Amino acid sequence: MLLIVEPRGQRAQRSDAEGRALYQRMLDYSAQLKTRGVLRASQSLLADTEGVRVKVREGKLRLLDGPFSESKEMVGGYFIVDCATREEAVAIAGEIPAAEWATVEVREFGPCFA
Image (spheres, rainbow, N blue to C red):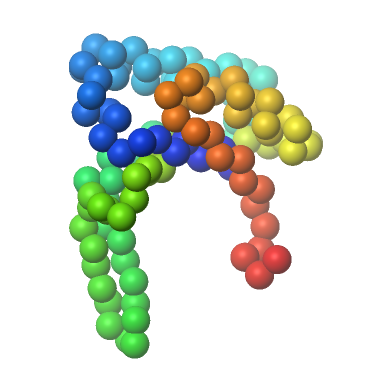
């Protein structure tokens, strides 16, 4: 999984035209990955101002509406790619247009106890 981790508030600093142009670059790149046969899924996420964090502690449900002030960054989207090696995933991550304005975190699927 390639997580797009971007600075909070960065989107608000762009004009509508700038935001749409960057989004189109991401859509175009997704199409390239699909053509290459490695893309399994991708999606952009709304800003964390639209999110909610859910916890259950001592049997009680606790909700925290965004934005999450303790965070300097937010997950802005993701790609799920099918790669034979870590190196291939890293190479794909380096091609993602968002790597120019955000950080792309490469994570492998696996059990959480490992």
